[in-house]
Image (cartoon, rainbow, N blue to C red; front, side, top):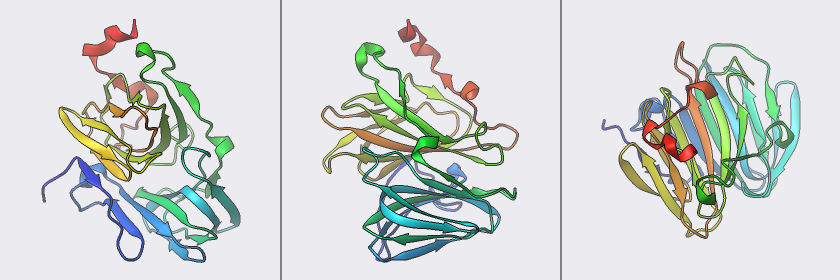
Length: 259
């Protein structure tokens, strides 16, 4: 099967959209990532053996339940409120009971390590200004890192979010790292769009699209003027080579812009 670099989500009759799996055209991501639309009153359960799972609330109101805990969570949308993420190890079940129209992103990857369930709340992952007023004020964005190797050393994934200012760039300066990364895009308007660069390939990003970035490729992104772009970013650690801030390498051709 040909491997692909970009895709557009399509929901089935059950409200599930598959981004990447271990076998599909985006298998280089080494993760299983899906999004879900849930109706009020609908309940979904998730449990993977031999895989850790992270359940991210994109919008809505729901009750997250897991072994030893239960919490009502709500998020107007990704542009207004911070994230709730329930992170569990393999073999631990999670249930989500929707109390309003709800959207989820569920990311899994292979991991045999046992760890205690953790519900990350907005106060655990505050947004921080990034590249503010650099590059002529065209790359302003806010970034939160929900968990990485420093926060969750037992995990084989990194999960974070980025909010671009209107029409601004992110992942800029262009950078690369050895680990594969998945970007999932949302826009604050149904007609919003941007450009997604994966190496020398360029794709039109729209609401619900995603970029599957193989390790080693530079991957800057931009939003069109007038539109705010949200990116959920997921990185799969490599065995013996986890993603760290120090393994994020900016493209040498553009380092002069930092001056």
